[in-house]
Image 1 (cartoon, rainbow, N blue to C red):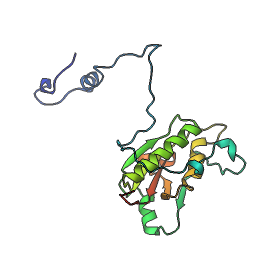
Image 2 (cartoon, helix red, strand yellow):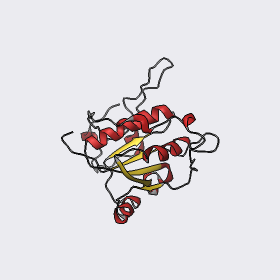
Image 3 (cartoon, helix red, strand yellow):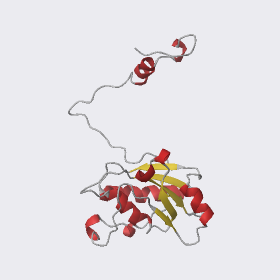
Length: 188
C-alpha cells in the first residue's frame, strides 16, 4: 500500500511501523540471479576532474609488508604536514571543520580501495573541498586492520593532503579519519 503525504493522520503523527512500511513500499527481496552493482563511493556527487593523482604513492600490501607500520583497531591516527598550524590541526581533530564529502572503504580489497581513494581525493581537490572523511572501518585480517594501516601509509604520501586524524566518536572514531586537503587553483 502506497500512501501520499496527505494521507497522514490529522495530528501528523505516524507510527514507526507505518513510516517503515512507507519507506520500504517499493522494495522486493533479492533473487539468486539478481545482479548487484556495488556502490564504492558514498559521498556527495562530485564531478570527475581532469586532475589526477599519481598512483605511485600507493602500493599493494605485499609490496612493502615488511616496512608497513600496522595500526591496531583502536589506535588513533594523526598526521600533521609541514606548515600546518597547531590550531588548525586541533580544529580538525575536534571535528570542527565542516565535512564536505565522505568515502566509505568498508568491504573493499586493498587494490580497489587504493583506486577509489585516488579518484576520491582527485575529485575532492578538483571541487575545492577542504575537509573530507574517509571511513576505513576496524575490520582486520590476522588481528590487524589492513585498510586502516594502508590508509595511514597512503595518506602521508599524497601531496594534496595536508593533515589527517582519527574522527570523533560520532563520526566513526578510530574507524574513520578526517582529511584536510590542500586548496588547488580552480583553473587547472
